[in-house]
Length: 272
Image 1: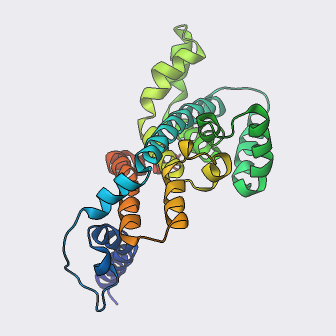
Image 2: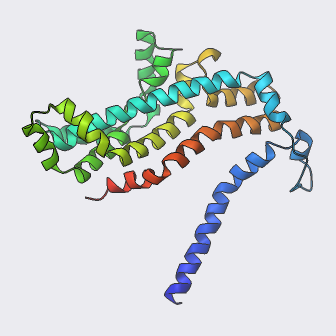
């Protein structure tokens, strides 16, 4: 088989797998605008009556707006903290000389292998002791520092920012904090975009951590709201699909806004 035919075959397979991946999302969005009776019609209808009743019903009969507000507060706050912590730790591990630097970097990497389920009980007792259960602090602070973010920032700063730039700033009398804010941050836009997309997606879609920390409806995030909606009542599929569609919108907006820098931030950190 010629090389050109192999490339065409690979492209066709890629398009097929991409279609299979997005098909459930497209079906969810389309079905959220259908009447309840049309969702399970047999044979299935490709075109049915368009309606916004499911969205109106969700907003009027559930605490959707509260869940949405809580998710926005938790996700945005946690993402900002994740970016700042990851870049500061990455700068220290990549450019500052100190004793046992390799040991600390290895320690960060080793935490990648510890799943949350192993340590969440002990973290819960710590949060209960300091009174962070059913608070925004308990939702935002503990998951903010991620070893993946520190690793990406370290690799990017090490491979993309020359030592000469930092040494010149030190000769001019700049402190480490000033170098970080004036030089490192402006040069880290791609990895900041990558961290923003990853952290936003993790926090927005997170279910286990809010389930552990929150029991009051006042602090529930949208993922807990989805689970509560489908668990407490008889499942109303039209409303559930509308709620699911609304929950996907912020993640899509963030990804489409930063996709130009996302791949660049991921790949540059892996190329030295």
